[in-house]
Length: 150
View 1 (cartoon, rainbow, N blue to C red):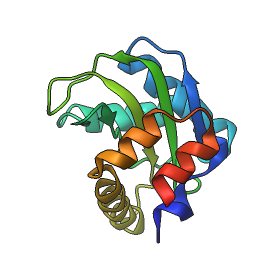
View 2 (view 1 turned 180 degrees about the vertical axis):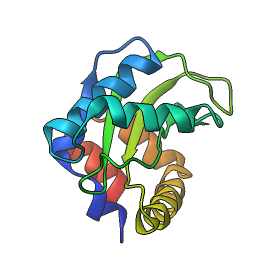
View 3 (view 1 turned 90 degrees about the vertical axis):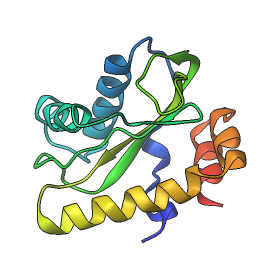
View 4 (view 1 turned 45 degrees about the horizontal axis):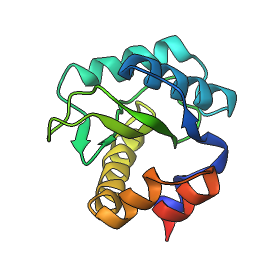
């Protein structure tokens, strides 16, 4: 599995107009529902927030990776949102967030293993400042996909 196998231009929003973490997660969950990755936004959000309570998902450098395992997931994927303005988020470096990658992974054992693999794959990409800069400055979904997949 590679990042390019997971990043879908249909689940990327480069004009995410939100002011809060909750609005961002809600909007991206709705993108996942619309594109048939999950079956129920409310149940999915409960699982995401259960994970959020365990620790911050803001990894620094203006990036957050909210995630959790959910039985509502039909197929593994991510929804990516890029905001124009920095939004408040609990982060490792104390900065806000402009790029959000919301993971959709199932609850079964295979899902848990995939979850860890996905986090590792994206962590490697997001450890590169040039990748983050390209992603955050993207004007469209294709640019975000290129930043993460090249």
